[in-house]
Image 1 (cartoon, rainbow, N blue to C red):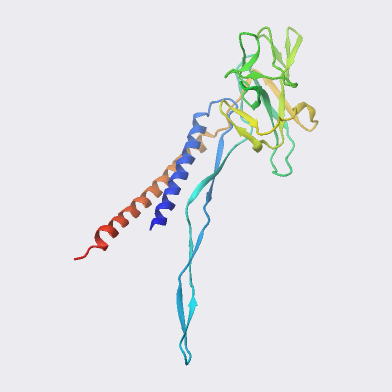
Image 2: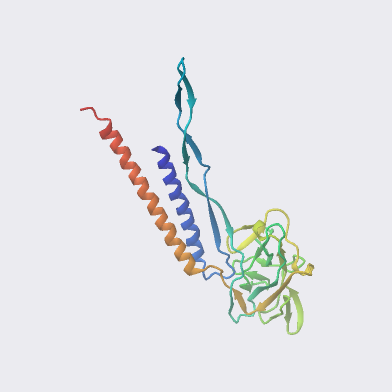
Length: 278
């Protein structure tokens, strides 16, 4: 009976966590460069139940041999095993702003170990000085003329230096080269992740590598991308699919709640009626 409480409760906790992930995806449906999170549920190890019994063997001297008939397997609940971002390309949306830029994956090599295509990211320097990566190209200029993200993180060039400009009247070509009045003024750094699943997701649409830094995308001949000025990559959240998954998670949570209530009523009857002495 108590195992039933734990099994139903674990299902409710897993669906609650799944609902939180889906709600966060829905709230970022219009966030540029956002990569929706995907959750995977996994069952706890099953337990094999057997009944301890004895079997009498007909003989002159009666023999009782131990016998354990199999009852069956007992599930012990589920849990959210991991959460991984979905790194598919989002739709490009035109903004008309000269400081906005969007990355478009033209040809990305496939990772032999995972079978997944690599991905390119803008190079960003966070407040702690450590390099971060993002697909959100909603850039602007601060008071000193440095190109930054909307959150104030510095945009870096291929060498890892900050990009400083004199005005927002710039032109960005498909390779990330920045020109002011026809004069080269810098280049937006683009990093390549051979296995994007190794990146750790942070807030503000940023990713980081646990150890080291990603290599420059321009250094690899098999990596082809295009940068589009005046555009932003939209979120890859599928609003309709997310709403359907949220309803499914809610119904599953509700079903586990009803099972938990049924177990509670059974325990109440066992305590108050079955054990009553008339």
